[in-house]
Amino acid sequence: MGGTIASSNSTGENGVKPSLSGEELVKNVKGLQEIADVETISFRLKPSADLTFSDLTSAATRISEILDSDADGVVVTQGTDTIEETSFFFDLVINSSKPVVVTGAMRNPTSISSDGDLNLLEAVLVATSSQSKEAGILVVMNGEIHLAPFVQKTNTQNVSTFKSPSLGPVGWISEGKVRFMLKPAYRRIHLPLSNGKEPTIPIVKSVLGDDGIIFKALREEDIQGLIIEATGGGHVSSSVADFVQEYGKSIPIILCSRTGSGEVLTQTYSFKGSEIDLINKGVIPGGILSSVKARILLYLLIKNEYNLQRIAESIQQWL
Ligand code: GLU
Image (cartoon, rainbow, N blue to C red; front, side):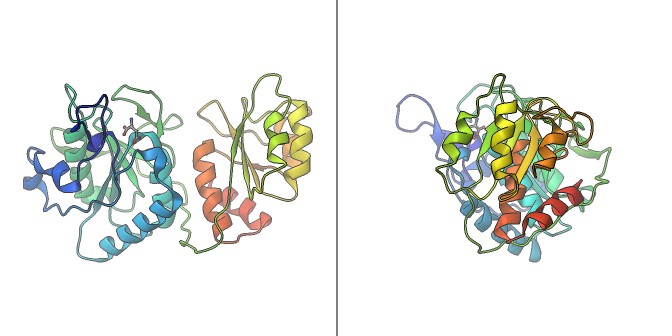
């Protein structure tokens, strides 16, 4: 689907951009043909921030069809910037025991020590391993295996950018062998892909001394849901708390933390703008979900026309 792993510079201008087909990506990966019969599909050729929900819906439909055939698994290559979102989308909508692995590269194919070929080879190894079955969508980067609901990009350039801060990787690849050390113990949700109306769901980050200017601007917008990326355990300024009160009973608002790991609190603090105050105002605690992952889940719940109560139940059930 594009990204750095498929980027090159054929025009002589500064910088690289997505330009390589699936066929070109796999053609020179040493040892790939010995581990699998790889069939390529050039699906999208985009920088990953340009991928849309419509792209992901088409991709998930296509992947599900392939998994229903005699393929052993699927590897998706794409830009690393949004892997944490796309992999979670696939995790929620693809219901198959066969492996689906998402990978990319931090160093493009024209740079020294590009990581694309190795990531692709190891992603295919993981996709062909029987150990990868029933694990949900996996992200394989830099020799590690991560679970889609937890994985995050944590560094702008380092090849070890992918971490699962609340958990860690669940396995790795060593000398061409796939090693799983952990398997998911949480209950996964599967949601159907629906043709419902396209919801708009902004993410608003809370900051020190926040006067709620973004919330004021949002009053003019037609939004169907909202994610608050709150400070610490799930806190906003008292000005923001007033705005939350306006929205809380009419649209779903999910409370996440800007800290990057850990569950948001639900029953510790009672000051204005605290998690208890916000929950009383109608906010749904987002548990372990990062803001961008909460947006993906909320998108699918709204698309499936869940009401406020069912949305809250589904998010709690996910934990
Ligand atoms: N650094 C990004 C990548 O790894 C480039 C932009 C994108 O995500 O497509 O692919």
